[in-house]
Length: 402
Image 1 (cartoon, one colour):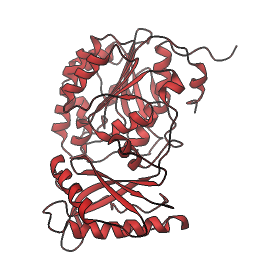
Image 2 (cartoon, one colour):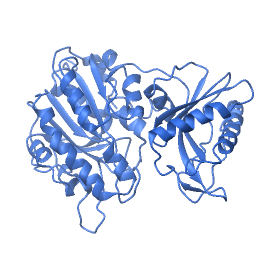
Image 3 (tube, rainbow, N blue to C red):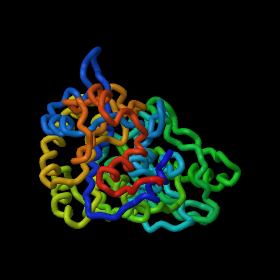
């Protein structure tokens, strides 16, 4: 993979690049010979853009590999998704501006609902609202203390998701996740995967039991599912690698965290997609690379709600003129991965992509959808190669070799 070669070819200039990332964009038909969510959506602006662009399909990690959101986003920004993968807990910690230290073990937590028999019946606790999450985190701060000189911190992320941080000496991240990833199953035992993780595994087992006791009177969020264990680490920034002054615009904390870890200026927190686009307009003169993240396409796919995902795509389509009126030198529209409503989960299917620039060779794609993009001029390529293509179209890469 040539993801590090482009670092050596960077040319500085004032061109502007916009990455519009509709999380979980790729889909599947729910009826035989039917359309995907993107194909079913009425998207006149995206279709017009596709007809004047070069299109294709992206594989976030590799053929047949179902990606998590973290590595899929690292790939979008030109970072090898395997070498740079980290537990989601670190991304969440950065996203909520947690004061990180080298003694911390970060954990991404879902509040969940467990029945009297100890089986998980709802992995998202009915998608409790963020205010309920804050109340529960406050409750846990006052009722959960750990032994072995380990501090524990509870921080709200959004809805049913939270950050838990353990602080102490010798906390290794190689532990079995407690999330069974399905309903009708009990919590998985927190087991050390390497001998050095025994202390952390004991702490997580103790944490789980004390949280369950503290939340026993909660109607929905009466347990936690733990995953994405991670220690603190740093990454070379987009400025250091590509000379880009970058802005991250995202409502959801985890994606704000990715932007922060990669050295982007993280825009003011917003409460809606409309506000995200307003921030793009307001800050457009300040930076030369913009990452605009859209969450509802993924959430509706995870909910298994085909029609709601279609509506989310159509809402974004109506906002496309806001971006095109800014006249960026390069506009990329794609997703980090596929989240088909038919599966109600992330999947391994490649993701449609379009790249609009004055220097692109428009192909024969006339509609922005999975089947049309299969025949686009970009072909099917690894997501990690996308940044190099965008930089080239922005006039930011020198020739390689004599």
